[in-house]
Amino acid sequence: MPDLTASEAHTLRELIDKAEITDLIHRYSRAVDRLDADLLRSVYWPDGTDDHGAFAGNAMDYVDWVMEFVGGWMSTHHDNSNIMIELDGDVAFGECHWTGWYRFRQGEQIVDQVSNGRYLDRYERRSGEWRIFHRVCVSDWNRSAVRDADDRDHRLRGRRGPTDLVYQLRELKLG
Image 1 (cartoon, rainbow, N blue to C red):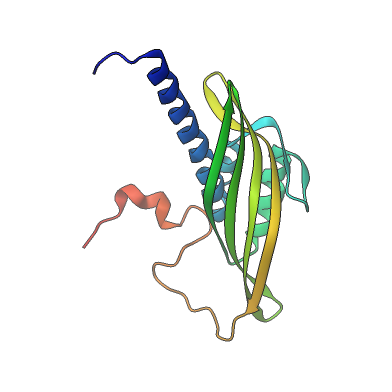
Image 2: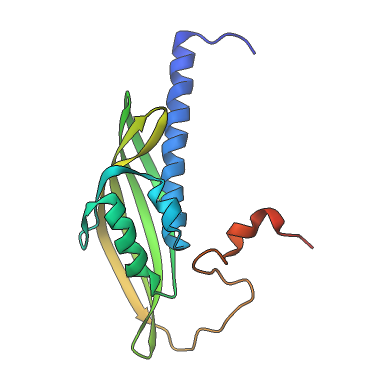
C-alpha cells in the first residue's frame, strides 16, 4: 500500500471517526430494541447525559429508566437515517433521524405506534474511543393505531433480550 499524503491520512481518519460514531448510533438502537442494558451503557460515557423529554439526567440513570420504560412493551424497532456528523478533534456533533415502531398493550388492546424524530448528539473521543457524551431526543411526530386481531406468535419473530436470534447469529444455519 502506498504512503498516504497528509491530506489523504486526514480524510481517512475522518472516515474512520464517522464510521465509529455511526456504529454507536446503530448499537444504541439495537440495545434499546433488544433490551440490552450492558450494550446501551457501552455507547455513553459514564458522566454523560441524556434528555429524552420524559427523562433528563445522567446517561447511566437513563439506561435503567429506558429499560424499565420500554421493557414492558411487546416490541420496539428503531431505524436510523440522515446521519450527519461534524468532527472537531476529539469532539463531534451529530444529527440523526430515527423512526421507531412500538407495539404495546393498552388494556386488552394492542397498539402499534410509529414515531419519527432526531437525535442531537455531542460525542467525545477519550483514549481513542468514541462515545455519546450528551444526547437530546427530539420527537417530530407520531401516529398510533389499535390492532384488530390478536398478535400470533411466529417462530422467527423478533424477541426482547438475549433470546433474540441476533445473539445467536454466528450459530445460525441456513437451509
